[in-house]
Length: 447
Image (cartoon, rainbow, N blue to C red; front, side, top):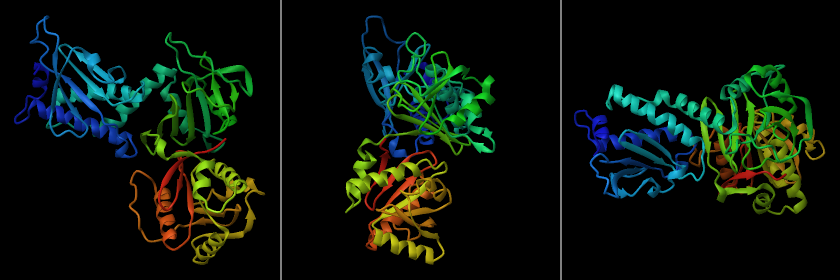
């Protein structure tokens, strides 16, 4: 093996193989910190160069070692050059003197993970060299290293000032925190931003440069935007106007949705969020992601097309709730009985029956208090702020909050009692889940 890896592992009872596994385990810890569900962590592989110095110019193959996410032993192989490593062009690689290391995490395009890894690995090696493996502690460095990588990604591809985003998301305007969407075009190969392909609903006569020097003016302008109306940054880095049209896949959608809370959507619906003091990489589970109308039609029994479309409209209105909410939907008879039961026990607020279709403007207010809103398939409501009770009969997901877990448990419990309900969970990160007694689906709301 190369002198470099042997040098790093020079401690009593620590081998070079121990070093490889240590690097693997610390990298896995970084990914656990990033992904909401450990099951979403990609099956990464880390390649280590071996004894390059001992090779002559005539030799055409070079030995390498590798570890995978779940491997119990070091693997060994040989390569002709780095292009032999699968997915090398989209991996993170580091060269130094007579060694290289490659982190392959199976992405097929450049993402923030390359930049996060580029921040993580040099810091890891520096600490090993300074303190040795036995005294190595890097958990306190994970958030700053992740922030550094994301900052490099945003500036490198979109020329976005990461500090501006963080500061903007912490500011209030007339007592309210931010709720807006900003569209930024990606740089092309020559380093110039692509001009946004979609038109503007209206433009500004004097565009405002999107920089921290104009922070107060920008904070005022974002009040023109929300989840459905976007501020658009032009190719000169200025806020040029407002658009309600969708973006191209190569553009970056910045969704600022509360105090120090934001989500980036880029490169064909890849998502990265920051909330509750942590960064999160979101994995789109295509098998469980469906458009709302199609999915509602399949899970709500005895509802016609007109009813489904009306329910879909109300779900989209509820999804605008800034702090998240829950809708419980069922047939009129079951929802009526359940509303009387929960309100009668003092676990909800009963209201006179109203048609949410006729009074859509009330949805934002009715879902603003803690608890669930109960609604029948005719879109009538007489119960809000409901505490979803029931025995704990399902295994919770620690990566999800109380709102999600209580809904999953409640729907399952009511099913056992003969009531067929579905739950719509709007999370603070703006994701929307549809919960049945058997499955949870990530919902793509129809336009």
